[in-house]
Amino acid sequence: MTDAAAPLARTGAPLAWARSLPLTGKLGLALVLLWLAVAALGPALAPHAVGAFVSPEVFARPGAAHWLGTDYLGRDVLSRLLSGARYTVGLALAAALLASGTGTALALLAAVGGRWLDEGLSRLMDTLISIPSKIFALVLVAAFGSSLPLLLLVAAVTYVPGAYRIARSMAVGLYQMDYVQVARARGEGRLYVARAEILPNMVGPLLADFGLRFVFIVLLLSGLSFLGLGVQPPDADLGSLVRENISGLPEGASAILAPALAIASLTVGANLLIDAVSGKGRR
Image 1 (cartoon, rainbow, N blue to C red):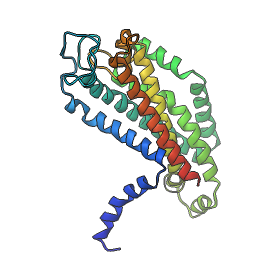
Image 2: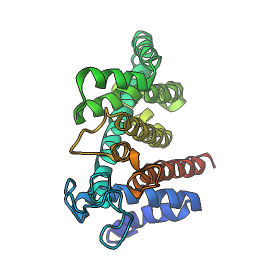
Image 3: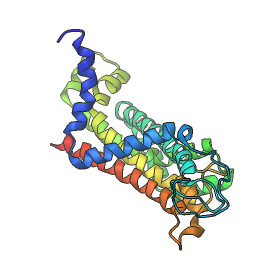
Image 4: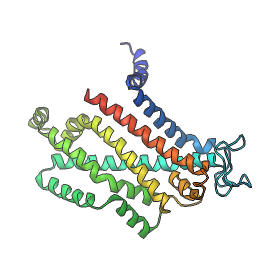
């Protein structure tokens, strides 16, 4: 392959991977990419200011003026949905990255660090995982008040133990493989072995686990917001939009149906993509 053709091959690789997915995987990928785009560009595309009162009619039906109707205060639902997705997707993505990254790093240290380090980290994670995740999150948020950094920290800490246990089970098994023993025999350090020999062979399962962490955190943050302990006014995430428009449920107002369907489509899309990627890895 010529040097000029190499960038084209690299550009075509993601497209070839996407085309190789089953139909459900393509649907999941489309939904995930849609919500990532909404999170990145949504506030700039919102037709109205997030907190602007645009109509005297509350829970107005969707129409040409307001594509998703208005909420319980006469604000544009589409504008608030586009803005709220930024908090739901952004916080969940950051927390999932932090949880998976921390759990994987600790698991690699446990695998190569010797028995005592492994035992200490494993017992610490067993202690954390024994605490119900939602109770843990509720106690911390109720005690210290809700803020974006705290929500990020709570969501990440809640799911570090699960990420650690998955990564450790793989790392400990890989540490016994022949190629790792050869690296140790030629004098490579433990950190090198963890980074260069073990971690690359864990990437596929870790990506699938990361997707699951993302879905769990979306649901956790949405649940906290529904209880009034998540993102606080005047800002709102998708869970907050459901909670604040709950009075429109008897009449089937779009102000409550739209964010609920948004949460559902995000989590279903992520699950479809995870299942497709995991299935490709097993074949």
